[in-house]
Amino acid sequence: MRMLINGNLIDKDKKINVINPANNSIIDTVPFGKREDAKKAIHAANNAKKAMKDISSRRISRILYDIHHDLSKSLDEFATIITKETGKPIRDSKFEMERSLDTLLFAAEESKRIYGETIPLDAGIGGSKILGFTIKIPVGVLSAITPFNYPVNLAMHKIAPAIAAKNTVVTKPSHKAPLAALKLVKLMAPYLPDGALNALTGIGMVIGDEMVTNNLVNKISFTGSVTTGKSIAQKAGVKKLTLELGGNDPLVILDDANIDNAVTAAVRGSYVFAGQVCIAVKRIIIQTGVFDEFTDKLVSETKKLKVGDPLNSKTDVGPLIDEEAALKVENRVNNALDDGAELLCGGKRNGAFYEPTVLDRVFPNMELVCKETFGPIAPIIRVDDVDEAFKMANHTPYGLQASVFTESIEKAKRAVKSIDAGTVLINKESTFRTDNMPFGGFKMSGIGKEGVKYAVEDMTCSKLVIIG
Ligand code: NAP
Image (cartoon, rainbow, N blue to C red; front, side):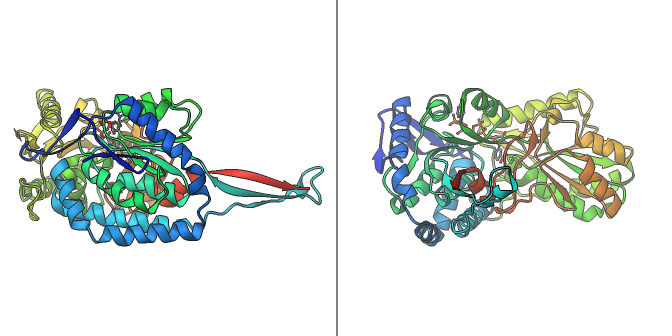
């Protein structure tokens, strides 16, 4: 596949192989883009600003509805590419595509309700008889940098609101999984002025760096790891910045919880896409009173999961993104076992595959749980009481989402007050997300919110008009 710059498909002699992690085969190649390519794409996006700004909101909305219609016809084709390039089970790739369509639809709707406000200038000294109001204008050129794990929907969360707010975009998917995102851009770009939507391939340290530091860029929207996010924040200069970073989400199970529901949440939350989700359940914090019942049921449900070919519709857990990622998980689990954790099931690696694994007697200082571990692991931390449970939930530099299982409204209210996370979910796993909700974490998990309405808000500037 090729890059798209200013409406032209661009190739390079040097290529990056895109590997299917399930069988190590090369699916396709993409150009190894250079800094010069990023500069050209940013220039094109800058030149297209006026054409985008001049399109009526009615037309922009129509364009987004038309893209939605077009994309809905090739949902299965996109899902298959996602599965091949990421190893995501095909069921989950189809769900990602359905959600991407939803994101697009929210953007088509939102594009018609970008309102300014009137300012009561007569409330201030000297303001009587003067009219003041704001209008929302596009921020300009958006750099959209995305990770490997939701290659289409995370790109959509940046591109669709950017178009809704009449911005131009340069996007860069992860070099590990660039194909579906490139295909998406190729489908969307012909609906827009040339140069309004560009897609680059290459590595982050070169292409991404130009997208962050170039002064023609007005806003950066980044989703990825804390390490990359921190370096972007340091280099960005005076640009609007949204950072959607990593998570270490707790699932807190209190003594009075409905245990069957908590087990379902743990299975869904810990093993979806082999745990490679920012809002996966990464720590299970449980009161000792319900430990035995919960753990017996969790182990039994974990053993039922089908691990294997992600293209098989019955597969629950496929490979990790590559063998290196699986080795990292294996190391962290082995270190935890050396330090006293107890293996209840799983714990074996085969190439890029890692078995769904339940570990008991995990302690908060173990690397497995104090860092973000991207793997199908359910690490159990036992606590004695509710206060300790909430304290443990906060025992992390991250703060993306947090879920608490309890039948008590009073304890639920305490959880909402005590837990420092962008979202606190009661009796629902942290992996829950709809594409219109305000999504974004506290602490090291990021800055700003996505979710179409909130992204649109962030992709506009308020211009104040005063009429004397
Ligand atoms: P990553 O390594 O940080 O990469 C993310 C993107 O940044 C890739 O496109 C990467 O390019 C690019 N990049 C790397 N270095 C860069 C630099 N110096 N300047 C600009 N861009 C640069 O993350 P990942 O491993 O792909 O994804 C996993 C992480 O994303 C996890 O921490 C996960 O929690 C987080 N995540 C967060 C959310 C959220 O909404 N909060 C959602 C999904 C994932 P290349 O890799 O191609 O070099």
